[in-house]
Image 1 (tube, helix red, strand yellow):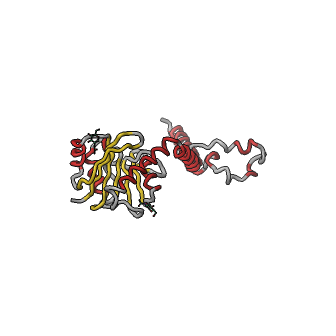
Image 2 (spheres, protein in one colour):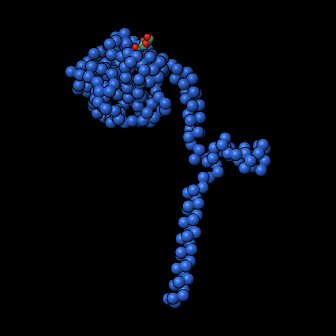
Length: 242
Ligand SMILES: *[C@@H]1O[C@H](CO)[C@@H](O)[C@H](O)[C@H]1NC(C)=O
Ligand SMILES: *[C@@H]1O[C@H](CO)[C@@H](O)[C@H](O)[C@H]1NC(C)=O
């Protein structure tokens, strides 16, 4: 190839690379205008500051405007959920389950200063019930989080240290993928002397014994048939520590 063609091509490549780099830098440094918070955008930047258009220009929040939008809609979503009849009914059902247990097997194990854990907390009925009963420190976990009541965690691998809770509850042990592992994690995180309470689909004594057997580090305290959120359940209470 001719030398001057080679030099020319080199020049072209060099210029292209420079332009590409500049564009890239520009894109990185420049905040898209739709990401700017409309409340902080100076109005004199618009030709017609008080016209509807000037406001509309920034109105449709782009995907980068996530913080503000998520919180508003989450708040609204929660308000709607927490005011629904089924929610209110469900929470009061969990409350009566807990308070009936408070008069029974959980009497000396659950107080206002207790640290409670709800595993498979769903959208947080049980968490809210315990909070409304005055328990100060309630943690709810579920595979899918529901802020602010429930955080995301795998029940088979709880992200907590050993012995940090006084009370552990699950309404869905019978739906666990690995029940033995699930129970092991509850027993690990609930301190010795604390209690674990599970509500499973209503069952007879034989099945209760099978479930209690999963709690290898606990002592059986009580089993009772209850109604929870419209479902017939058997709630089982064990005390951790042999
Ligand atoms: C928390 O304290 C209140 C007021 O003393 C009491 O009514 C409630 O039963 C307590 N809750 C628990 C779970 O001990
Ligand atoms: C719960 O109900 C079942 C029947 O569905 C019965 O076999 C069992 O004995 C009851 N358990 C308790 C603790 O009352």
